Image (tube, rainbow, N blue to C red; front, side, top):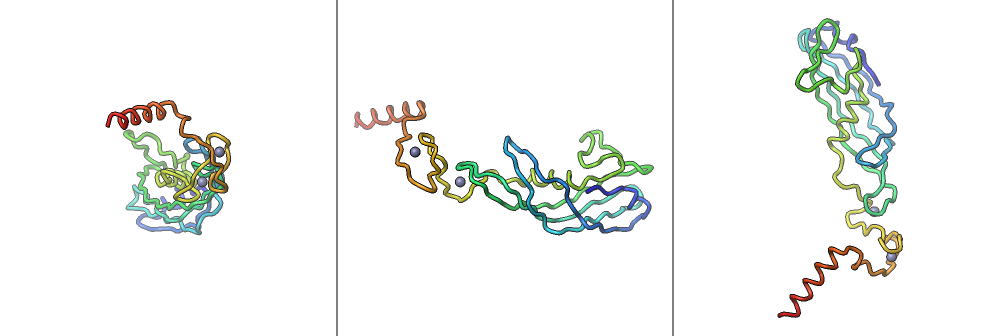
Length: 176
Ligand SMILES: [Zn+2]
Ligand SMILES: [Zn+2]
């Protein structure tokens, strides 16, 4: 969704509410592909501060579909979105901040709501996406999902560094 700044710049010191919507359906992040399956209904509020600033606020929550980091089964999770941005305007244009560079959510004279939402999603993205806190993941030996069945493979010798560590550990035990 895009909102033209002209819808608010002509109304000094006033606020205007817009029914929010999103067009963004999929995005990639850190090598993973995610889909947006639901967004809580929200209103975007634009307020003019005097004649020179636009205050943009809205809150919502987005449901995202992705894959468990360990076992790769489909999971969905919610991410809160809370937008509070102020931009300066002059002669019907948003003034770009020389320090920050161009705003990703400003396209010409439009405020791009999808971009504001995506920014918030990435800021609040969970550090780990798991189907359950104690997901056992996929067996590195046989590839089975260990949450579904315990394959019983011995995977302790897979990582040579770990094997070395165990050798040292065992030799210490022998000295005692
Ligand atoms: Zn999992
Ligand atoms: Zn296995």
